[in-house]
Image 1 (cartoon, rainbow, N blue to C red):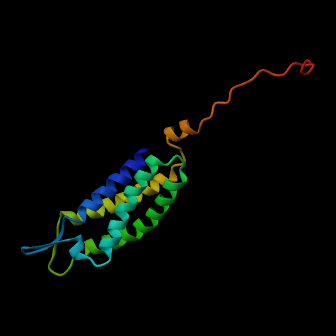
Image 2 (image 1 turned 135 degrees about the vertical axis):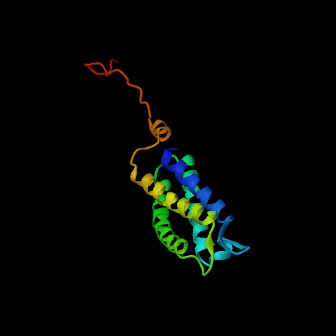
Image 3 (image 1 turned 90 degrees about the vertical axis):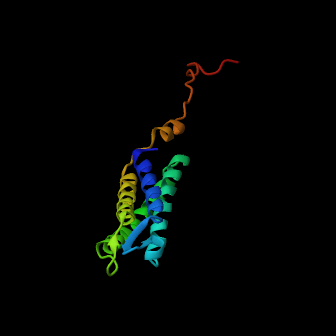
Length: 150
């Protein structure tokens, strides 16, 4: 796997973990992403799972088509979710303070999106795929000039 896939997978895991951390606090009450959002939390989980899926597909697939397909979808979904999340982090609910989970989630979502973009823009095959695709054809001597003898 290339650095891009490792980074995408790590950001996906960080995003999935951040969903369970505290995102907002108002006095002694704290809320994680599942309690704070209605639809955005599901989309954040989708981005995290797609990022981990990209890393797994890049590690297991011998062709580059599957990781590029997952990465393309992740860039599209991740871009929309990252913008939506940035707006929600910039304007927290009334009287609520941002906690560490909000910042970790935002950085992980943007990181997964950008590293997936980096992954689909890189045309180089990983060396393991290139080595597995190489077929050595044995060279045979040329036939005799007069043709085959009886």
